[in-house]
Length: 255
Image 1 (cartoon, rainbow, N blue to C red):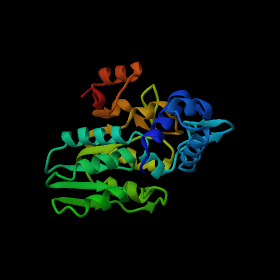
Image 2: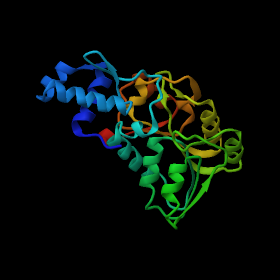
Image 3: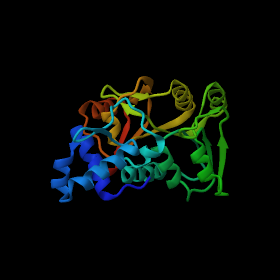
Image 4: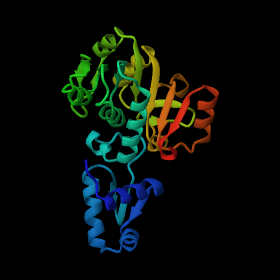
């Protein structure tokens, strides 16, 4: 989903402050209040903001935004994270890629690799990579979620357990400051847990907005991953966990 520069800045301001007001935005961007109201209505239609009288709120941390809407959040950061993750994975490797907009960015960055075997429960990843003859794509069976093309359920878990791969690329809907990796759908979490258990090197990819969100279902803990790639990590407890658990922390914004 494409966002104009003004829309992206409005979303960022709402995320930073929790809410934005029409009059403040009109003064900031030097446009009319009517223009800002139109902007806010469009962003609310995309479920990036929630409308209130006189402005808009950034969605609650536990609200799982529409998948297409999430593509527009931190899009440049996700692309940089994707490139950094792809740089870790050599040609002729086997890997899992699970559900998420950031893991999809990794799959895009991997398209110039050769000899990959990619096992995924993400229809979007499979569809993107299947046309490249140097990449073998294996897709899990199970229940397909209409919202995002993710394949979940016990059949997908059983399928994943048949493999032992070199790398796993996983995401999370939220990362608690105590290191807990969280998601919304317990069926997806079961698949993610099987992926972690059956990979030699686990790569967590997540932009810094995930530190600000919450979700009810626990995937695992940051200490279970080998490499954590994010755009920026200012959370002291997360940095400490990475240091004490020998997790390689890669920050693309400082690269």
